[in-house]
Length: 222
Image 1 (tube, one colour):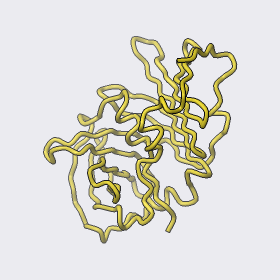
Image 2: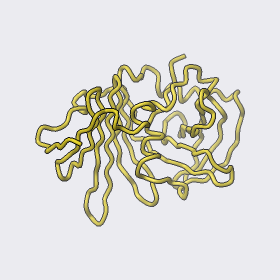
Image 3: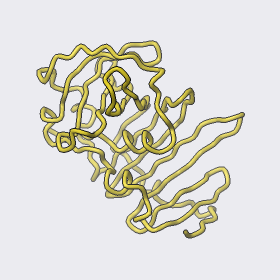
Image 4: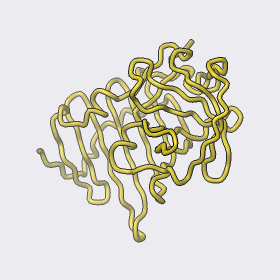
């Protein structure tokens, strides 16, 4: 069975700047236990790996905001871009981690800061992939259905078999189409917090130029 990848998008944005979308979600667990093997999730990532590259884009729901995002991972490199509108203005941020440097870029200003790669947050350096589940049956927890933006979707839920204290990840489907990734923070069962990323596309096609800083940016060192 191909590896099922639970990606750093789960924790990276969930941890950094965007809050959670708990008000947009309700949960109706209808677990079938481990018998409900997550074949749909396996199909989504069939043929996609961190070595060949992973590209994800869509919209994050966060505290009333809708944040467009693009995340790319390839050969130890990470690209994360997010943007949203505030008072009619675009607010965007790009983070790039390569083997040699860590960049934080402000596209509207065409400026950025270059730091040692060790300066990148742990979620970028060590948890580029929150979990690589070698055996999907081991990481699979249960299935159920949950409401996102007034519509119910079936989900398959996973945890990191090596770290039971980590956040859980739900892959939400409309039939066989992946609609959303939902990170469920460890919390009281009656007060769970969610990070929600609606999915427009997941693919293994990653342009290496994403990991390059545009030449017209003014970069300072820190």
